[in-house]
Image (cartoon, rainbow, N blue to C red):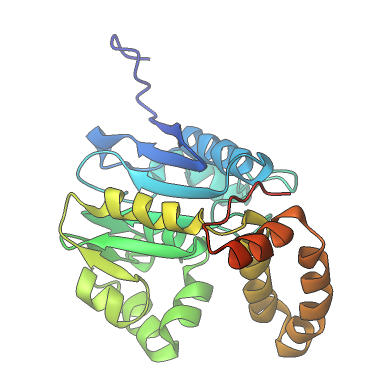
Length: 265
């Protein structure tokens, strides 16, 4: 721990704004390069978001000029060699390769967004990119491959050709290219990306949280289990939602021509 109380291994800040949990990657002096300590703290933050009924949406961002330069490799080498990913089944995996967060997550990225940075944003749901972003999946240049989900989600979002183009060449590409291939949903002026992400999260929180979570789950079911399984679950889930207090409030607000006041019950 340094004299100012800041760990050289960085951390993750959390802040609650209404129904939103802001999670900030915090090691700006090292371009937010991820250490095992930071990943453990991010796991804690994601698990808190997932389990706290008062939190309806998450926003992930990076402090400083960059989202993250990726893993601080010397600090991860032993874990890589042992196959230890530092995840357990009872905790949410921020890369969504293990236990997934049920709540929606909006990610704001800026500056250098390399390797793990791309994987974290693709593990979420909506990405807002600053126009100064630089993306790269450069693991092959370090003798390793993308093991945090990029080899899966890059293909899902961008298609085979676009994924292979960037994964195999390890090139650096900008926000416009990331948007062209479907990795990001909005490109905004640098410095405004977090405000826009919070704005989107606030809009999401205007919906009934159980319905929002069911919508995310239904889409994920389609990706993971296929169309037949996704279709088969629609009716049952709708029956469950229709029996909630929020569904009754939704009908009442429609009749009264007013904004619904949802509670998550």
